[in-house]
Length: 420
Image (cartoon, rainbow, N blue to C red):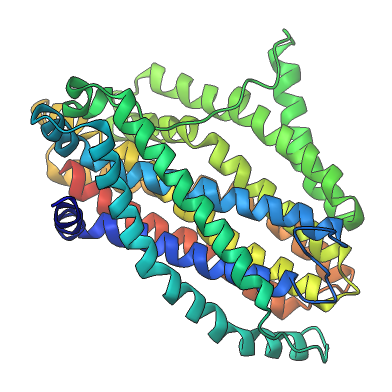
């Protein structure tokens, strides 16, 4: 009976199920491909007696990012089930039965995703060998590593356990009233404490944040081998700039209440909220790129390490773009009441569509500009130091931009569907 309900729920909410499934496909593909490369004898990665500390650090980082992406995808998917869970609780269902229902849905999607992810990973091996031969001038061939299979199974079992804990917490922490009212639902969230608690001149913080953010990228161009130091400067600068320059400016702008530009007032207000909610996602995106580029630099004499960093760079960007899309979709799904209020005071559907369009363009435009500043600086330095060719860096740049554009388009369509 629970299995039948889980299958029917997947069918009824097909669009969300499809995105959740695609996340599992991408995660499965990437984890299998990652371990298939890292288990190569030249890199020497094993869970026990590991010979390559750099690969160990990147492995921990990559697995953590994959879990974070699934974390957001799980919130996006499960929150839609709130009213169904409330009805089941009213009808006498136990929390254990609800956990079974949610686990079955996750398990079905995961079982359907894993084989496809592994097949895609295997089909990419000839392409990776071609890239290594043509762009990196290496005669090494990447072959199937048996250790990659067991490592992938271990990580995916962690994913199932992770999702189960999240779903149990979701069902347990929300009362029936909260589940019936989407605005009061306690979704799984995480945050970090403020990085500063000292009183410093506002003008000094503003200047310092801009100098650190811009200076970190410029420093990267001149000294690619200090990439981690530049990353620390840039991330601190960006975090401070977001808190002390950009968001306060948007607060000030919306408080001025430009009556001659009412649409701007509304969509700038929404963009401000998006930035506050997704601040840590943006920071994680920039940090991931810089850390993975550091692996390219460290492994400049080892083609396998470079190709591992390149794959990580491309796929992690796709996964983090998806996590931004999922988290933003979860946020905009609760804005229907705001748009209903806008309609009551005279903003018709055409005006509401413009607000949504400008909000998505503004937010994703800010995301692209703020991250491209560092990515372009990194690629310039890589080209100057002859680590990768100009044409290959341009391909990587396109592979970074396209997923964000696709996520922006998906967010826009989903946003319109939810609130209009």
